[in-house]
Length: 139
Image (cartoon, rainbow, N blue to C red; front, side):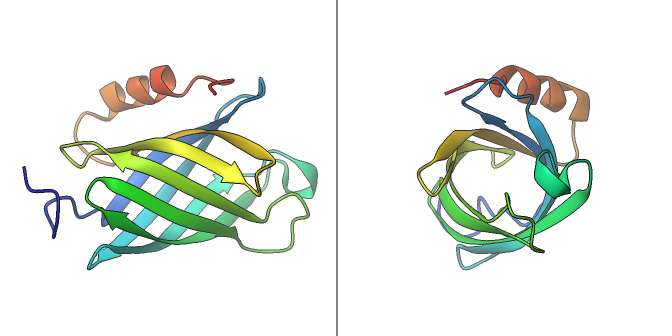
């Protein structure tokens, strides 16, 4: 399968979760990605888990790039929640373009794993893979 051009176009709606290296519950999120000439932008929505954002819907913008099956982006949270700033993501797109899995870091202080699954298809099976692949406390 060709891995350049539009063969792995990531444009679309995604569901995912990220986990911390500490024993915290994984955080679910939804994302809308747009890819143009391997450049990525989009919006991520999740429920805050800390500080004044705890239990509240929060949003972030992402900007980055896909090179072959490798993706990198910076997520910038909207608003002025003290514990939410920017997060760097690095991951790999599955050969079929349906999953993105990788690692996130915050200013070198916090890190964890993430998994995103393109919406559609066998959602129940994909949700099960998300739960299995991204356990809380994963390094």
